[in-house]
Structures are given as structure tokens and as C-alpha cells.
Amino acid sequence: MRGMVELAVAAAGGLLAAVVAGFAGYWKGKRNGRVAAERAASRKAHEDATERKPPVEIGDRVNLGVKEFNEHHSGNRVAVCKKEGFVIFVDDVPKGVKVGIVIDAEVTSFGREKNSAEARYVGR
Image (cartoon, rainbow, N blue to C red; front, side, top):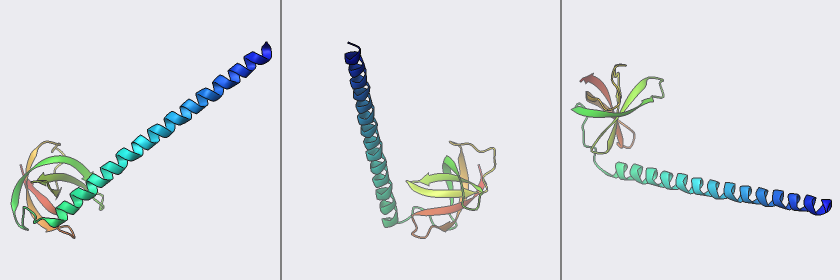
């Protein structure tokens, strides 16, 4: 009898391990599929942005809503804004400005492929 109990416990443990491994594989595949879809969407948005004319010119003063803040490669805080879906990175934004605030900025340059622009903060 004792041998049968040990055999049943071992079988149950093996079954549990197989279920856990199967679920982990399923979840990883689902996550990897989602990540791949997000990458494909990002690549498509980038390609679309490089094919269209920017909605701003150098020297334009524009009103922009702050979408988020990132760190520039220089280490400075940069506001990420959009105009008609076109990304504009704004430098010199004061610390008191939060996401959702509308700011004024002057466009100073474009990215390499003109799919984004840089601007400097000029007020609110």
C-alpha cells in the first residue's frame, strides 16, 4: 500500500510540474507575441513618420501638450510632445511643468530623417 501512495504522489508531482511548465511556456509565448506586435506597430509608425512632411518648420513657435518626460542622451530632462502625431522633444522645460500642461516652444532642429524635431521651451 505504501508503495502505491508514493507512486501516486510522484505521479501527481510530475503532473503538476508538467502543467506549470506548460503554462509558463504558454505565457512566455503570449508575451513574446505581444512584444512582437508592439515592435511592428512602432516600426510602422516610424516608417510613416519618415515618409511625411513635418507639420512644423525651424523657427516656428508652437503650442504643445506635454505627453511625458524622458532623459535626453545628454542627461537633461526633455518634454515629449506631439503635433499632429509628429514628435517634438522640448528642452529647458522648468521643473514645475507636469504631464498634460500646454507649453509654448520654438522649433530649433529636426532629427536625421525629419521624423522628429527638437525645440526649446519659451513659456506657458
